[in-house]
Amino acid sequence: MSYQVRVDGDLSEPFQSTIGVLIGDTASPTLWNLFLADFVLTPHPDDFFLGGVRVNFMLQADDSAMSTGSTAGIQQHVSTFMVNCARDGLRPCGVKTLAFALGKLLSPLPPLYMGDTRLKYTETYDYIGFKLRSTHKNMFADHFKAKASKARRVANTMFALKVFVGCVPPWEGRIILGARVEPHLIHGCDVVPDVDSCSDALYAVHHYALRRLLGLNPRSMLAPLFTELNVIPIRYRRITLCLRYLDYALHLPPTHLVYAALCDSLALYSAGHSCWIGDIAYALAHLDVPVMLPAPRDLFREGSIKRLIASVDSAMKTWLKNTVQESPRLTIMKDRFEPMRQGPARRVLMHFRDYLRVTNVKHRLALTRIICGDSRFAIEIMGWRTRYREPVDMHLRLCRFCKSCLETPQHALFQCRGNRDLIGRRAGFWALVQPVSDIRPPQAPTTALEVFQALLTNSATVSLLAEYTYVVVTLYDEYQPFWPPTI
Image 1 (cartoon, helix red, strand yellow):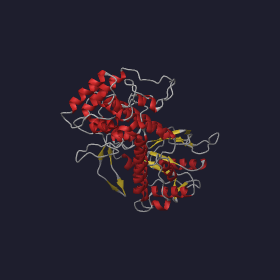
Image 2 (image 1 turned 135 degrees about the horizontal axis):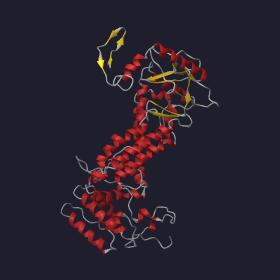
Image 3 (image 1 turned 90 degrees about the vertical axis):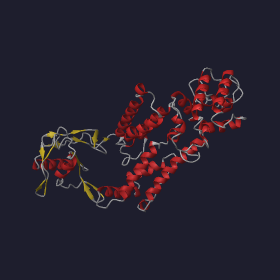
Image 4 (image 1 turned 120 degrees about the horizontal axis):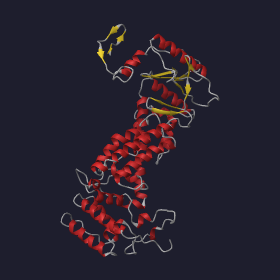
């Protein structure tokens, strides 16, 4: 098919298209918008306004939507739409046109007609990539659910590669998740802040994917998912992108419709009504470390949103740091150093950890689980509540071999002398370490953790440590934990 574009009587050069302007040609959206640029609905008293601008017709290529506050108003707009389409040689399809009612619904719903066709009412509708539902308190509930489902399918597809190419390494998996899964999890976050449990489905998928990538169980702690992979929690990622969009809207010219909507939202927020700005304030206040939204007048000050974004980043890091410092399950992660490609090792809260580059999958998983507090040692598993057992007091979680010390990873690796096989494996490990490092066995239980961290941050010993950890964990798994007699 051949096309020409006419503007003010001037014609463009003819061009060919085998797809068609109405069904997906590259230039289709722009050309269609230009074609209907002079389309104006007759004003109605019940029309909506944004910043003094009447908004009763929205158009994205051939996806059009009319809105007003009454049945009489929407019927008038549909009739006007029919007249304008006839003038421009278009024929709207009444069968594909749907009515979508928001707010308190009448019973029965009043009839609407497009020509001789009675329009059907729908509770759900997809418009420009968003799934809307009129009967849920959060009209975007279906959108959250759909995006979470798509993200989980994509993540499962990535992990299914294990059948063909083996386990996906953490570095490559992190890249794939960021490129293929995260876009679904952040879709629409700039205009739909997280204000209720609907967004929990998105968080759950993110946690699920990161846990599988690290090889952790579904009940493992959340903080290590982000500190070890250097990944921003999706909750903080979404609110940060929302604030960036707010910064963009604040700098638009007053003639822009988005700016008009922003001004209306600020007015509603100041009056204590529900609005987009209010949702942002709610999302900020309900972070793990609350962040306060500045007063509306302060938002227009230069750099205010950048400072707010920095506060969100600081809140995220404070939450992660507090979790690591306060949890007895993450003692290995406390105050550790991380080797740098340039310069000496230093303390870093979020970093892609060097031990995740260990090539042997079984060795890497064993080491990762110990570091992330997801081990099978008594210090961990005896803290779980099950159907038949209550959590065991910390001082009673004794080693299954020596039965005299707490069964911690560092005790099992470097201190326990209750099993001959374990002692022999330990001696073999140190025989391999001595030629490549000056790190020596701990002389006291209080130094075992420091020795473990030193081995972990040494590129010459981290693979040896991972292999030795796998051997020790396998040995411990051959024996039942030492449950206190009273349990």
